[in-house]
Image (cartoon, rainbow, N blue to C red):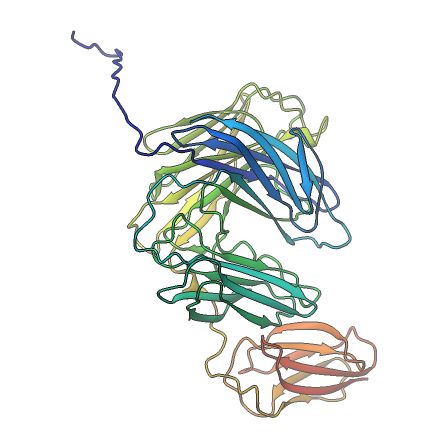
Length: 496
Protein backbone atom coordinates (compact mmCIF):
# COMPACT_ATOMS: atom_id res chain seq x y z
CA UNK A 1 0.00 0.00 0.00
CA UNK A 2 1.04 3.57 -0.63
CA UNK A 3 1.27 5.56 2.58
CA UNK A 4 -0.50 8.89 2.60
CA UNK A 5 0.36 11.96 4.68
CA UNK A 6 -0.75 11.31 8.26
CA UNK A 7 -0.75 7.50 7.94
CA UNK A 8 1.08 5.44 10.56
CA UNK A 9 2.69 2.03 10.37
CA UNK A 10 3.58 -0.30 13.24
CA UNK A 11 6.52 -2.70 13.08
CA UNK A 12 7.27 -5.42 15.64
CA UNK A 13 10.87 -6.43 16.30
CA UNK A 14 12.00 -9.52 18.17
CA UNK A 15 14.17 -8.54 21.14
CA UNK A 16 15.98 -10.89 23.47
CA UNK A 17 17.25 -9.74 26.86
CA UNK A 18 21.02 -9.94 27.32
CA UNK A 19 20.60 -10.25 31.10
CA UNK A 20 17.62 -11.53 33.05
CA UNK A 21 17.80 -9.44 36.20
CA UNK A 22 16.05 -6.54 37.95
CA UNK A 23 17.63 -3.09 37.79
CA UNK A 24 15.96 -0.98 40.45
CA UNK A 25 16.20 2.80 40.49
CA UNK A 26 15.19 5.01 43.42
CA UNK A 27 14.82 8.78 43.59
CA UNK A 28 14.22 10.87 46.70
CA UNK A 29 13.29 14.53 46.79
CA UNK A 30 11.87 17.27 48.96
CA UNK A 31 11.08 20.65 47.39
CA UNK A 32 11.97 22.74 50.45
CA UNK A 33 13.71 22.29 53.78
CA UNK A 34 12.16 24.38 56.56
CA UNK A 35 13.44 24.50 60.13
CA UNK A 36 10.88 23.79 62.88
CA UNK A 37 8.37 22.51 60.31
CA UNK A 38 7.26 19.18 58.93
CA UNK A 39 8.91 18.53 55.56
CA UNK A 40 7.52 16.10 53.00
CA UNK A 41 9.83 13.71 51.12
CA UNK A 42 8.70 12.06 47.89
CA UNK A 43 10.11 8.69 46.81
CA UNK A 44 9.90 7.22 43.31
CA UNK A 45 11.15 3.74 42.42
CA UNK A 46 11.22 1.95 39.08
CA UNK A 47 12.50 -1.35 37.69
CA UNK A 48 14.47 -0.74 34.48
CA UNK A 49 15.58 -4.37 34.39
CA UNK A 50 14.31 -7.35 32.41
CA UNK A 51 13.11 -9.41 35.39
CA UNK A 52 10.80 -8.78 38.32
CA UNK A 53 12.31 -7.78 41.67
CA UNK A 54 10.73 -9.87 44.45
CA UNK A 55 10.45 -8.44 47.95
CA UNK A 56 11.88 -5.03 47.04
CA UNK A 57 12.94 -3.02 50.09
CA UNK A 58 13.75 0.69 50.36
CA UNK A 59 15.84 2.04 53.23
CA UNK A 60 15.87 5.75 54.10
CA UNK A 61 18.70 7.06 56.30
CA UNK A 62 17.53 10.35 57.80
CA UNK A 63 19.70 13.40 58.35
CA UNK A 64 20.70 13.56 62.05
CA UNK A 65 18.52 16.65 62.58
CA UNK A 66 15.35 15.09 61.13
CA UNK A 67 12.67 13.15 63.02
CA UNK A 68 10.21 11.01 61.05
CA UNK A 69 6.55 11.82 61.71
CA UNK A 70 4.58 9.67 59.27
CA UNK A 71 4.12 8.15 55.82
CA UNK A 72 1.42 7.01 53.43
CA UNK A 73 3.22 3.62 53.25
CA UNK A 74 3.81 1.49 56.38
CA UNK A 75 7.41 1.40 57.59
CA UNK A 76 9.60 0.12 60.38
CA UNK A 77 12.37 2.14 62.00
CA UNK A 78 15.75 1.25 63.45
CA UNK A 79 17.65 4.26 64.77
CA UNK A 80 17.88 6.85 62.01
CA UNK A 81 16.83 4.39 59.27
CA UNK A 82 13.32 3.80 57.90
CA UNK A 83 12.46 0.61 55.99
CA UNK A 84 9.66 0.47 53.41
CA UNK A 85 8.50 -2.72 51.69
CA UNK A 86 7.64 -2.24 48.00
CA UNK A 87 6.72 -5.88 47.40
CA UNK A 88 7.32 -7.36 43.96
CA UNK A 89 8.25 -4.76 41.34
CA UNK A 90 7.68 -6.04 37.82
CA UNK A 91 9.94 -5.18 34.90
CA UNK A 92 9.31 -1.62 33.62
CA UNK A 93 6.99 -0.86 36.52
CA UNK A 94 7.39 1.13 39.71
CA UNK A 95 5.64 3.14 42.35
CA UNK A 96 5.92 6.06 44.73
CA UNK A 97 5.19 7.06 48.30
CA UNK A 98 5.72 9.95 50.71
CA UNK A 99 6.97 10.40 54.24
CA UNK A 100 7.24 13.42 56.52
CA UNK A 101 9.92 14.54 58.95
CA UNK A 102 10.40 17.56 61.22
CA UNK A 103 13.65 19.51 61.01
CA UNK A 104 14.86 20.46 64.48
CA UNK A 105 14.74 24.12 65.54
CA UNK A 106 17.27 24.51 68.32
CA UNK A 107 20.24 22.58 66.91
CA UNK A 108 20.13 23.90 63.32
CA UNK A 109 20.70 27.23 61.60
CA UNK A 110 19.23 28.82 58.50
CA UNK A 111 21.19 27.83 55.41
CA UNK A 112 22.52 24.58 56.87
CA UNK A 113 22.55 21.61 54.49
CA UNK A 114 20.72 18.41 55.43
CA UNK A 115 21.19 15.12 53.58
CA UNK A 116 18.93 12.06 53.53
CA UNK A 117 19.84 8.87 51.65
CA UNK A 118 17.62 6.29 49.93
CA UNK A 119 18.74 2.80 48.88
CA UNK A 120 16.66 0.13 47.16
CA UNK A 121 17.20 -3.63 47.31
CA UNK A 122 17.90 -5.86 45.48
CA UNK A 123 20.69 -3.66 44.14
CA UNK A 124 21.98 -5.97 41.42
CA UNK A 125 23.99 -4.67 38.47
CA UNK A 126 22.82 -6.09 35.14
CA UNK A 127 26.16 -6.38 33.36
CA UNK A 128 29.47 -8.22 33.48
CA UNK A 129 32.17 -7.06 35.88
CA UNK A 130 35.21 -5.49 34.20
CA UNK A 131 37.99 -8.12 34.34
CA UNK A 132 40.55 -5.33 34.94
CA UNK A 133 38.96 -4.42 38.28
CA UNK A 134 41.22 -5.46 41.16
CA UNK A 135 38.32 -6.09 43.56
CA UNK A 136 39.08 -3.12 45.83
CA UNK A 137 36.19 -1.08 47.20
CA UNK A 138 36.87 2.20 49.00
CA UNK A 139 34.55 3.86 51.50
CA UNK A 140 34.94 7.16 53.32
CA UNK A 141 33.61 8.06 56.74
CA UNK A 142 33.93 11.05 59.02
CA UNK A 143 33.00 12.08 62.52
CA UNK A 144 32.98 15.43 64.28
CA UNK A 145 34.71 15.27 67.67
CA UNK A 146 34.48 18.67 69.36
CA UNK A 147 36.80 20.97 67.43
CA UNK A 148 38.20 18.22 65.19
CA UNK A 149 37.08 15.97 62.36
CA UNK A 150 38.38 12.44 61.89
CA UNK A 151 38.22 11.34 58.25
CA UNK A 152 38.78 7.67 57.45
CA UNK A 153 39.22 5.96 54.08
CA UNK A 154 38.75 2.18 54.25
CA UNK A 155 39.26 -0.55 51.66
CA UNK A 156 36.50 -3.09 52.33
CA UNK A 157 37.40 -5.14 49.24
CA UNK A 158 40.51 -6.86 47.95
CA UNK A 159 43.94 -5.28 48.00
CA UNK A 160 44.50 -2.35 45.64
CA UNK A 161 46.84 -3.06 42.73
CA UNK A 162 47.44 0.62 42.03
CA UNK A 163 47.17 4.03 43.68
CA UNK A 164 44.17 6.33 43.42
CA UNK A 165 43.76 10.05 44.01
CA UNK A 166 41.91 11.64 46.89
CA UNK A 167 41.14 15.29 47.53
CA UNK A 168 40.18 17.20 50.67
CA UNK A 169 38.51 20.59 50.16
CA UNK A 170 37.87 23.18 52.87
CA UNK A 171 35.05 25.49 51.72
CA UNK A 172 36.58 26.47 48.36
CA UNK A 173 40.20 25.80 49.30
CA UNK A 174 42.15 22.81 48.02
CA UNK A 175 43.58 21.58 51.32
CA UNK A 176 45.06 18.26 50.26
CA UNK A 177 45.58 16.41 46.98
CA UNK A 178 47.36 13.09 47.30
CA UNK A 179 47.31 9.37 46.47
CA UNK A 180 46.83 6.21 48.49
CA UNK A 181 47.04 2.45 48.11
CA UNK A 182 45.43 0.21 50.71
CA UNK A 183 45.60 -3.51 51.33
CA UNK A 184 42.45 -5.55 51.91
CA UNK A 185 40.76 -4.30 55.09
CA UNK A 186 43.28 -1.48 55.58
CA UNK A 187 42.30 2.10 56.37
CA UNK A 188 43.93 5.49 56.73
CA UNK A 189 42.74 8.43 58.84
CA UNK A 190 43.23 12.19 59.00
CA UNK A 191 42.56 14.50 61.94
CA UNK A 192 41.61 18.01 60.84
CA UNK A 193 40.54 21.15 62.70
CA UNK A 194 38.06 22.89 60.39
CA UNK A 195 37.07 25.68 62.77
CA UNK A 196 33.56 25.75 61.33
CA UNK A 197 34.56 25.38 57.68
CA UNK A 198 32.89 22.80 55.44
CA UNK A 199 35.09 19.81 54.62
CA UNK A 200 34.61 17.71 51.49
CA UNK A 201 36.63 14.56 50.80
CA UNK A 202 36.48 12.90 47.38
CA UNK A 203 38.10 9.52 46.69
CA UNK A 204 38.47 7.72 43.37
CA UNK A 205 37.72 4.02 43.09
CA UNK A 206 40.24 1.78 41.33
CA UNK A 207 40.04 1.23 37.57
CA UNK A 208 37.13 -0.90 36.44
CA UNK A 209 35.12 -0.62 39.66
CA UNK A 210 31.52 -1.63 38.88
CA UNK A 211 28.80 0.99 38.78
CA UNK A 212 29.21 4.74 39.23
CA UNK A 213 30.28 4.71 42.86
CA UNK A 214 32.63 7.49 43.96
CA UNK A 215 33.05 8.00 47.72
CA UNK A 216 32.28 11.62 48.61
CA UNK A 217 31.69 12.91 52.13
CA UNK A 218 30.76 16.41 53.28
CA UNK A 219 31.01 17.55 56.91
CA UNK A 220 29.44 20.90 57.73
CA UNK A 221 29.14 22.72 61.05
CA UNK A 222 32.02 21.14 62.97
CA UNK A 223 34.57 22.91 65.13
CA UNK A 224 33.09 26.35 65.57
CA UNK A 225 30.08 28.62 65.55
CA UNK A 226 29.05 30.37 63.43
CA UNK A 227 30.09 27.90 60.74
CA UNK A 228 30.27 28.27 56.98
CA UNK A 229 27.27 27.30 54.85
CA UNK A 230 26.67 27.08 51.13
CA UNK A 231 29.62 24.83 50.26
CA UNK A 232 28.07 21.39 50.79
CA UNK A 233 26.44 21.28 47.34
CA UNK A 234 29.46 22.19 45.16
CA UNK A 235 30.21 18.60 44.18
CA UNK A 236 28.01 15.61 43.26
CA UNK A 237 26.79 13.21 45.90
CA UNK A 238 27.86 9.56 45.88
CA UNK A 239 24.63 8.43 44.24
CA UNK A 240 25.63 7.62 40.68
CA UNK A 241 24.34 4.05 41.01
CA UNK A 242 20.67 3.47 40.19
CA UNK A 243 20.04 1.88 43.59
CA UNK A 244 21.08 4.94 45.62
CA UNK A 245 19.91 8.53 45.83
CA UNK A 246 21.13 11.19 48.26
CA UNK A 247 18.96 14.27 48.66
CA UNK A 248 20.75 17.31 50.11
CA UNK A 249 18.92 20.59 50.65
CA UNK A 250 19.77 23.83 52.42
CA UNK A 251 17.21 25.01 54.94
CA UNK A 252 15.52 28.20 53.79
CA UNK A 253 13.29 30.99 55.03
CA UNK A 254 11.31 32.95 52.46
CA UNK A 255 11.69 31.72 48.88
CA UNK A 256 10.70 32.24 45.26
CA UNK A 257 7.70 29.93 44.81
CA UNK A 258 8.39 29.26 41.11
CA UNK A 259 12.00 28.42 40.42
CA UNK A 260 14.48 25.96 38.99
CA UNK A 261 17.71 24.72 40.57
CA UNK A 262 20.45 22.47 39.24
CA UNK A 263 22.66 20.29 41.44
CA UNK A 264 25.53 20.03 42.01
CA UNK A 265 25.93 23.80 42.13
CA UNK A 266 29.53 23.65 40.91
CA UNK A 267 32.62 25.55 42.02
CA UNK A 268 33.10 29.34 41.91
CA UNK A 269 30.83 31.94 40.36
CA UNK A 270 31.06 30.04 37.05
CA UNK A 271 29.50 26.95 38.72
CA UNK A 272 32.14 24.65 37.25
CA UNK A 273 31.36 20.93 37.07
CA UNK A 274 33.26 18.03 35.49
CA UNK A 275 32.05 17.14 31.96
CA UNK A 276 30.86 13.69 33.08
CA UNK A 277 28.70 15.09 35.90
CA UNK A 278 24.99 14.29 35.84
CA UNK A 279 22.89 17.37 36.66
CA UNK A 280 19.75 17.01 38.77
CA UNK A 281 17.16 19.66 37.98
CA UNK A 282 14.33 20.52 40.37
CA UNK A 283 11.48 22.73 39.13
CA UNK A 284 9.19 24.07 41.86
CA UNK A 285 5.84 25.77 41.36
CA UNK A 286 3.14 27.32 43.52
CA UNK A 287 -0.32 28.64 42.74
CA UNK A 288 -0.13 32.20 44.08
CA UNK A 289 -3.34 33.24 42.33
CA UNK A 290 -6.79 33.69 43.83
CA UNK A 291 -8.46 30.46 42.70
CA UNK A 292 -7.76 26.77 42.15
CA UNK A 293 -5.50 25.83 39.22
CA UNK A 294 -6.87 22.75 37.45
CA UNK A 295 -4.00 22.31 35.02
CA UNK A 296 -0.29 23.04 35.32
CA UNK A 297 2.20 22.60 32.50
CA UNK A 298 5.97 23.01 32.72
CA UNK A 299 7.87 23.52 29.47
CA UNK A 300 11.63 23.20 29.46
CA UNK A 301 13.70 23.29 26.27
CA UNK A 302 17.05 21.76 27.16
CA UNK A 303 20.34 23.13 25.80
CA UNK A 304 21.87 21.18 22.90
CA UNK A 305 24.88 20.42 25.09
CA UNK A 306 22.79 17.98 27.17
CA UNK A 307 22.39 14.34 26.11
CA UNK A 308 18.72 13.33 25.84
CA UNK A 309 19.72 9.65 25.98
CA UNK A 310 20.74 10.13 29.63
CA UNK A 311 17.42 11.70 30.71
CA UNK A 312 15.91 10.06 33.81
CA UNK A 313 12.68 10.94 35.57
CA UNK A 314 12.83 11.65 39.28
CA UNK A 315 10.33 12.13 42.07
CA UNK A 316 7.43 14.55 41.75
CA UNK A 317 4.71 15.97 43.97
CA UNK A 318 1.84 14.96 41.64
CA UNK A 319 1.34 12.54 38.72
CA UNK A 320 2.07 14.02 35.30
CA UNK A 321 2.26 13.20 31.60
CA UNK A 322 5.73 13.56 30.10
CA UNK A 323 6.43 14.74 26.58
CA UNK A 324 9.90 14.80 24.98
CA UNK A 325 10.62 16.11 21.50
CA UNK A 326 13.58 15.08 19.36
CA UNK A 327 15.22 18.48 19.90
CA UNK A 328 15.02 18.38 23.70
CA UNK A 329 11.77 20.17 24.50
CA UNK A 330 10.33 18.69 27.69
CA UNK A 331 6.70 19.01 28.74
CA UNK A 332 5.38 18.01 32.17
CA UNK A 333 1.58 18.21 32.20
CA UNK A 334 -0.25 17.96 35.53
CA UNK A 335 -3.87 17.48 34.46
CA UNK A 336 -5.98 17.20 36.48
CA UNK A 337 -4.18 18.64 39.50
CA UNK A 338 -6.70 20.90 41.31
CA UNK A 339 -3.95 22.97 42.94
CA UNK A 340 -5.52 25.30 45.52
CA UNK A 341 -4.36 28.89 45.75
CA UNK A 342 -1.79 29.74 48.40
CA UNK A 343 -4.28 31.83 50.37
CA UNK A 344 -6.69 28.91 50.75
CA UNK A 345 -4.10 26.19 51.46
CA UNK A 346 -0.46 27.26 51.47
CA UNK A 347 1.04 23.77 51.79
CA UNK A 348 -1.17 22.14 49.14
CA UNK A 349 -0.65 25.02 46.69
CA UNK A 350 2.90 23.85 45.90
CA UNK A 351 4.34 21.22 43.61
CA UNK A 352 7.56 20.15 41.92
CA UNK A 353 9.13 17.81 39.41
CA UNK A 354 12.67 16.48 39.33
CA UNK A 355 14.76 14.93 36.55
CA UNK A 356 18.41 14.29 35.76
CA UNK A 357 20.48 14.51 32.60
CA UNK A 358 24.18 14.50 31.68
CA UNK A 359 26.19 16.59 29.20
CA UNK A 360 27.04 15.08 25.83
CA UNK A 361 30.35 13.25 25.71
CA UNK A 362 33.27 15.02 24.08
CA UNK A 363 31.80 18.47 24.56
CA UNK A 364 34.26 21.37 24.65
CA UNK A 365 35.55 22.44 28.06
CA UNK A 366 34.34 25.90 28.95
CA UNK A 367 30.89 25.26 27.49
CA UNK A 368 28.17 26.88 29.58
CA UNK A 369 24.86 25.13 30.22
CA UNK A 370 22.10 27.65 30.84
CA UNK A 371 18.52 26.61 31.36
CA UNK A 372 15.18 27.95 32.53
CA UNK A 373 11.61 26.67 32.55
CA UNK A 374 8.20 28.16 31.79
CA UNK A 375 5.30 27.33 34.11
CA UNK A 376 1.70 27.66 32.90
CA UNK A 377 -1.25 27.70 35.31
CA UNK A 378 -4.45 26.96 33.37
CA UNK A 379 -4.61 29.44 30.48
CA UNK A 380 -2.51 32.16 32.10
CA UNK A 381 0.71 33.52 30.66
CA UNK A 382 3.89 31.69 31.54
CA UNK A 383 5.81 32.23 34.76
CA UNK A 384 9.52 32.11 33.94
CA UNK A 385 11.97 30.64 36.41
CA UNK A 386 15.39 32.11 37.01
CA UNK A 387 18.14 30.74 34.77
CA UNK A 388 20.45 28.00 36.01
CA UNK A 389 24.13 28.00 35.06
CA UNK A 390 26.83 25.35 34.87
CA UNK A 391 30.23 25.53 33.18
CA UNK A 392 32.02 22.38 32.03
CA UNK A 393 35.62 22.14 33.20
CA UNK A 394 37.89 20.86 35.93
CA UNK A 395 36.32 22.15 39.16
CA UNK A 396 39.50 21.52 41.15
CA UNK A 397 41.37 24.07 39.04
CA UNK A 398 38.94 26.71 40.32
CA UNK A 399 39.67 26.01 43.98
CA UNK A 400 42.04 28.20 45.96
CA UNK A 401 45.46 26.61 46.44
CA UNK A 402 46.21 27.18 50.14
CA UNK A 403 49.97 26.87 50.56
CA UNK A 404 52.69 28.12 48.23
CA UNK A 405 55.41 27.15 50.68
CA UNK A 406 54.98 24.52 53.42
CA UNK A 407 54.37 25.95 56.87
CA UNK A 408 56.98 24.84 59.39
CA UNK A 409 54.62 23.83 62.17
CA UNK A 410 57.55 22.66 64.31
CA UNK A 411 59.02 26.15 64.46
CA UNK A 412 58.45 28.52 67.35
CA UNK A 413 55.17 30.41 67.26
CA UNK A 414 55.57 33.74 65.52
CA UNK A 415 54.33 37.15 66.60
CA UNK A 416 51.53 39.31 65.29
CA UNK A 417 52.17 43.06 65.14
CA UNK A 418 49.13 45.11 66.20
CA UNK A 419 49.05 48.92 65.96
CA UNK A 420 47.72 51.10 67.40
CA UNK A 421 47.70 49.11 70.60
CA UNK A 422 45.82 49.97 72.85
CA UNK A 423 43.04 50.97 70.47
CA UNK A 424 39.65 52.62 70.71
CA UNK A 425 38.27 50.35 67.97
CA UNK A 426 40.19 49.98 64.72
CA UNK A 427 43.70 48.58 64.56
CA UNK A 428 45.99 47.01 61.95
CA UNK A 429 47.39 43.47 62.19
CA UNK A 430 50.51 42.22 60.38
CA UNK A 431 53.11 39.47 60.76
CA UNK A 432 56.37 40.26 62.51
CA UNK A 433 58.15 37.91 60.09
CA UNK A 434 57.06 37.20 56.50
CA UNK A 435 55.46 33.84 55.80
CA UNK A 436 54.68 32.53 52.31
CA UNK A 437 51.36 30.87 52.94
CA UNK A 438 47.69 31.31 52.17
CA UNK A 439 44.50 29.98 53.69
CA UNK A 440 45.48 30.51 57.33
CA UNK A 441 42.65 31.28 59.73
CA UNK A 442 42.66 34.12 62.24
CA UNK A 443 40.64 33.92 65.44
CA UNK A 444 39.82 36.46 68.18
CA UNK A 445 39.83 35.21 71.79
CA UNK A 446 38.88 36.76 75.11
CA UNK A 447 41.08 36.82 78.22
CA UNK A 448 39.81 33.33 79.22
CA UNK A 449 40.86 31.85 75.88
CA UNK A 450 37.32 31.54 74.52
CA UNK A 451 37.05 32.16 70.80
CA UNK A 452 34.76 35.13 70.20
CA UNK A 453 34.97 35.40 66.45
CA UNK A 454 36.47 33.65 63.46
CA UNK A 455 37.93 36.33 61.25
CA UNK A 456 38.19 33.93 58.32
CA UNK A 457 41.06 33.52 55.88
CA UNK A 458 43.67 36.22 55.91
CA UNK A 459 45.76 37.16 52.91
CA UNK A 460 48.91 37.61 54.99
CA UNK A 461 50.63 39.54 52.22
CA UNK A 462 48.42 42.45 53.29
CA UNK A 463 47.73 44.15 56.59
CA UNK A 464 44.41 43.30 58.21
CA UNK A 465 42.06 46.01 59.45
CA UNK A 466 40.59 44.71 62.72
CA UNK A 467 37.48 46.39 64.12
CA UNK A 468 36.91 45.92 67.87
CA UNK A 469 34.38 48.72 68.13
CA UNK A 470 31.48 46.52 69.28
CA UNK A 471 33.47 44.79 72.04
CA UNK A 472 33.74 45.97 75.65
CA UNK A 473 37.01 47.36 76.95
CA UNK A 474 39.55 44.71 77.92
CA UNK A 475 42.40 42.50 76.74
CA UNK A 476 41.92 40.27 73.68
CA UNK A 477 44.13 37.75 71.91
CA UNK A 478 44.62 36.85 68.25
CA UNK A 479 45.68 33.42 67.00
CA UNK A 480 46.70 32.51 63.46
CA UNK A 481 46.18 28.78 62.78
CA UNK A 482 46.64 26.28 59.99
CA UNK A 483 43.81 23.91 59.06
CA UNK A 484 45.47 21.19 61.16
CA UNK A 485 44.99 23.46 64.18
CA UNK A 486 48.65 24.41 64.59
CA UNK A 487 49.17 27.91 65.99
CA UNK A 488 51.40 29.85 63.58
CA UNK A 489 51.40 33.24 65.31
CA UNK A 490 49.85 35.02 68.30
CA UNK A 491 49.22 38.58 69.37
CA UNK A 492 47.58 40.61 72.16
CA UNK A 493 45.54 43.79 71.89
CA UNK A 494 43.91 46.06 74.46
CA UNK A 495 40.57 47.70 73.72
CA UNK A 496 40.15 51.02 75.55
